[in-house]
Length: 465
Image 1 (cartoon, rainbow, N blue to C red):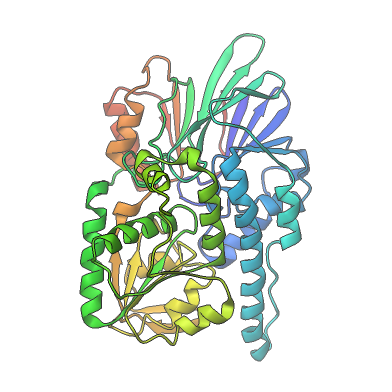
Image 2 (cartoon, rainbow, N blue to C red):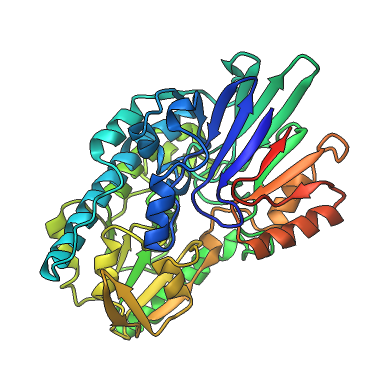
């Protein structure tokens, strides 16, 4: 038995790890790497460490694109095994993978028009909508807390990770001739007391665990302060009569924002400012949320019990058509535009940013982590000039970073989650899905808490279990 680390090693995107058990190859995640365009394309299209046709099974913790977004490429290159996930994750991937393919096709088309004017060679999208359709047919959903034998001598149980709708800890019982190993892949660890979803579940202590480390050395503001902070941003921007542009992940972050804005609307903080969710994926993902009340916390269920839709109110508009999206660029009244993608790498938000960041009345609100070399990170770092669709734009708009919306556990929350584990039974911990400086800080914190044998793998590293 062995584990090989392929993606999200000393970085945050492109999650992918290969578990080999008794001749069976089980891939944990198959996410898109996001960063420098040329480097990302190569990493996402070339499977350096294995042949996709040799992978027997895929286990997916949740639907975020940095965990699921390269599954159509895997299928395109020959993977034909089952994909195990929760039911909500399967439903989200049904819309997200199709949307990812569509955006790639449209972005390539847009860029190629510009390249044609310069007599440059056209680019191709990484995969097609048909590749996404083929991938979706392979999903085989499992309920939470339902032990399932996915191959001989390997039992999988999903526990609620509290990160996004349908997110799960993948907990394996692996048997060989000598003993049983309890092995857990956390995926992404959610936060307690966040809106919409239940808190992360406590799980039995594993022998070996792979943990994310995105905020291994950072602390979030208390979730209770989120709406107050958002209110201050809105009031300040309204005084300038500007727009607020929010690059947001279509799944999780968008719905949390909508619920927070709903609460501000009920308190009469927002009275006339229209709010637009400008992303077909966000619209479709919100419909999936409505189908999965089993994931909701008590506060969100209270909305449902009162026949009140938590994701709809008077000032909120969901934009689907391209024509309606384009009209938003001509809007000169104060408004809020929430649009994908979260790291501002693809999709309609690029057009809104292109049309807004040179106006000092406007605000760009960053509500999640942005990986190095992404447009979102360049906004966070407030670079003076921002390149969008190959053209330079002066950054004059205010940039506000609001980490209290993060769906990732911070340092304190991660250490508290680990604290319930038996230090003697947990023999090895691998830290992935984090920048190296954050991983080192979490490694130190876990060692101080009494855990040992904590490793930070590099891409391609192989370890025997």
